[in-house]
Length: 285
Image 1 (cartoon, rainbow, N blue to C red):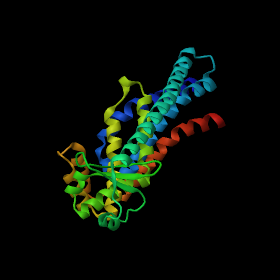
Image 2: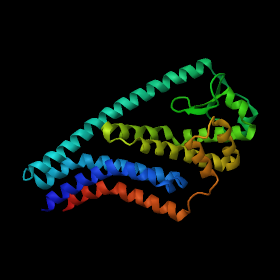
Image 3: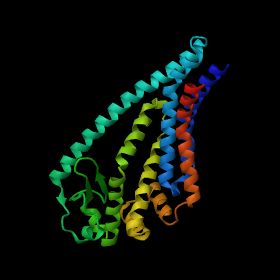
Image 4: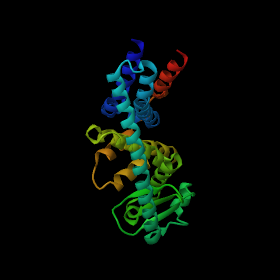
């Protein structure tokens, strides 16, 4: 019975990680105080769930052969569906994202004005990307990663921000660029859309986006301090959205203790190691 039990365990683990984790982790709001380890945990859970689903078929073949046709069929179906949906999602999301980003970059270069030589920019110490200002639009700031990284601001944002707040905003966007959060969010989007639509959890993707913003806030906080960044967030927000409120509250409190961050990091590593442990068990048993 070892074979069928192992196969069933892999299938159940995949289903639990893919279906239950996205519903449970957003409720663990304490993770927001340690966005780095929290994002690592999210990645580990997501990748472990996908790997378990992909391993279900090989594990079933190696452990049961043809002796358990129902279980074998379930495992093959799970692995096959996940593989096809993952490949299609990766192609669709990656192609669409790069196309839209290229179009956006061309538009920004066409209508924007470079913020070259601005004293606030020079004082911020952020010199790598071009900083471009758009004449129209609500107060906003964002970055365009990829070829020719750049930070984009609207003139309305410049009107609302003082020099210190502007430095904080630029440091936040630079943090996104330096940490390549675009690749991280692309991965989560691919995994999110690889799951059948009725089973997707929008709150999970929203939580990952919030954690990425919180991590960029922590990077900016180290460069400019929390007060200027919090003021910039309030000044840029037209209304007190839940995300802005959450980010301002996080800036008002210190990060999680080091031992808590270490514990979450270890949990992430253990979760990610589960599929490898199954492969190792099959290889050496």
